[in-house]
Image (cartoon, rainbow, N blue to C red; front, side):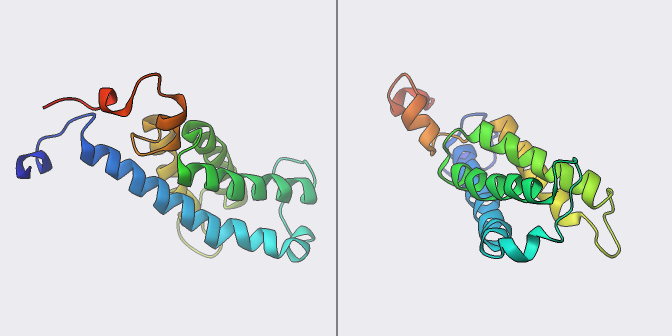
Length: 150
């Protein structure tokens, strides 16, 4: 067991656990720190929300809320993880590039958006892992077959 900590494996239990932690970490922090706040204070945000893509302030805010609430919920439970990650990658890419102008320091910097973006790109590439609803819903075989045998 101790040896597993040091020998990398693409399908190890630790890799799947790391994906679970990443999904929970990035999903729940986005949901509680950003998504729910925008949803709860919709009327306060709508008049001042930026419109980087030209959809209008209200439409842009609705799209961001959908990404940050629905996307985060899907990511957290691991349902359609890559789709949810792709939506959140687009959300954070637009925030970092167009709203924060790629600034990593200074006032109104996009450092947080940049860090979220990194986490979502990793989950987009790696998927939800074994401990996700994706595995239960979409796997064609039972869970034990998905794990490598020692």
